[in-house]
Length: 264
Image 1 (cartoon, rainbow, N blue to C red):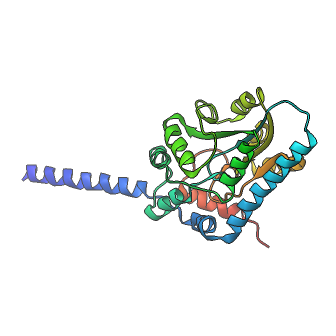
Image 2 (image 1 turned 90 degrees about the horizontal axis):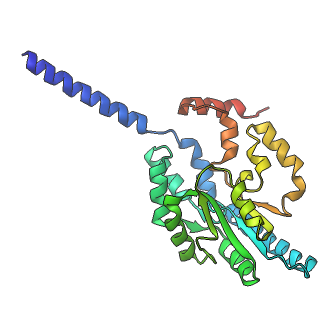
Image 3 (image 1 turned 135 degrees about the vertical axis):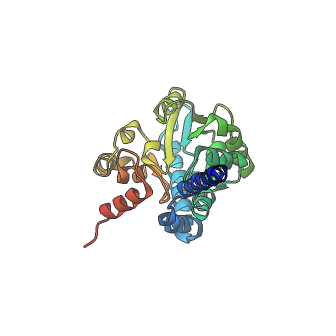
């Protein structure tokens, strides 16, 4: 009898552990649905993307007219995720399966090489390349994701994707050292990204909502001139600023989002 009771207890404990693990794995991503739907279905999203790359072409042409006699080779620096590649299907899968972001599933997605190109991205970068401008892809994807990223970019027709031009994260998340390595050999005409951290180190130092807004204001003349921003309502440093420092549960994040909302 005792043996049977002991076995039953072990079974119940195992069931409890498995149930707890299943519950812990579920994530409350429902709040992202609107952002992902807008990214995937809105004509406005496509229009903003075309607008950004059209502006980039205008600024590049303007630079050629204004600096005809400068011999320093030009470069354009672009972020990858949500700047030239659309990863909204990965985000949608997380929502549908109620799973949190995980490094493994992200690496699997990157190496599947299934991301699509943002509207206008391939055309602009091929145009820049045709004019002798070196294109650099500076991304915080990691070394384990580099081959898949390169395959993805090449399959979509992005130009000059090489070990030299595709600069992934190898240590810290800051892109400043990689930008400086490009600037040492080229004159960077344009930087394009969906996150202010894609443009300059000063933005990386701004962690709160107020400080990020203040830093954007201080650099207002760069936007549309040398910095061109692509919209990304799904995730980014803006979301980290909402939550603040420290790890929060899904419930705490939900409460924080409502707390930060401004009504009337």
